[in-house]
Length: 619
Image (cartoon, rainbow, N blue to C red; front, top):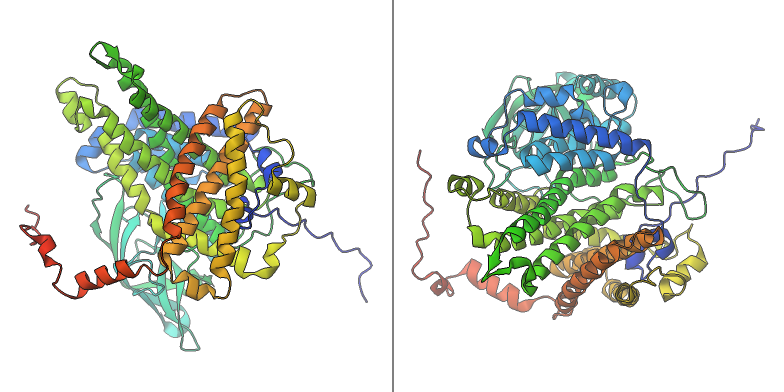
């Protein structure tokens, strides 16, 4: 007989991602104005963790010694384990610190301000380590094994990259069932594996032939003490010196069958798609969430996006903030012809641009890590990687130029002659690495655009998302209503520019997708990447203006000038991006020149007087 119990009411739909609203030509202003500023108990726990880690690093880590030796201090991982820093996101009853992703981000950022390699290791363990999968794994022996190891405070990693390139959908590493399927033997090589030389447990991607004879990439959890597993080499990157990054060799490493994860690794780790979360957000009008409400990924695409942010963004923001501080120190003690350096127009612009970059990066990340409180935020997690790492790169490049008057030197060289040993050179190399790690920048632009175009233009039902108040949507599209910029005409002008360019952007996306297929459009890689960059800049402007307006409404107008400068810089970049997008389709000149160079000798005159032999390193 049918149950007489009433069915539970359906969960309210999530408010759509602000980035995807922009792809549809709309700015969800009312949602953005409720900018989520974390507070409450989560902030208190985060502050305590930040203070504890800062004290530990000051006591145990000499960043310049790490730079010279290329190694972290012996026993540091044990200290981090005892402090709970390898389990930032785990609940306290599981031995962790119980932090939200936002406050875990703050802890990693603090580490990066002192020593980027430490931050990198912490981020890998907490973002891509075995324990990060626990919320998504079904009950069973695999989850029990990982939970037990995680409770012990293990260092862990994700071993996916191979020498053939991670952009390839296949993996040369292969897994073969043995002993009637009770075990698998894994053979292959992995490279550039963060925490690889020190990890206790890691997930390893490998090609497995299914019962239907088709190959698919699957994930296996491998103990680093298993016979046949060895660290083949430690990589010495151009930056991140001291970070534990290595090449791994697996020779018929046996793993129990239950160490195979049920989910197929279909590209979600390196190409996060548009997987709308099933829970964890609020639709406008359904009630405000608790401040600093916890967030956990609900699918593997979201897990990958969150992990990428934790690895790249805290260090990027830390370097950007340090550059702002170093600029003040340097300008404050320098003069030219008796005139303080800070009185010169170009120096003022350098410093102001850096301040605006800090506000922009901090704003983008605050939203990306807390936007789930008001709706879907996964697309922002993906876009934030480039927005923040590129802001970091622009800032550190600017700071190297600014401090050039005191020498293009290492900190050790400056200290040796009595100059202020600001380590801008070391962080310059680290910043460049952050544009490559987690997916090289132009690939991330493509991924973000492909997901948005698929969701917002190739999928017809997505054009009228449910759960958004129609009147609020109309206000956002037309620019009517209270924009919050009464005290800043410049910000209001940027807002009106933003509304117009969001409409232009949507029309452009409609034209690009009309009459074609995703496969055909996505083969136009430069076009799609440029679309992703335009969407990112419009998102950045939206978030910066919304946060500045929200703070001003609460009586704090200090962010309005920063928002003005941030939006002015975005508009300069947008001008160039629109021009790139309007280039003749196909880029025939690029293809022809590349073909001439790659397939013949007609352009070899370009190498006149160059020694092309690669010098071999000497012991």
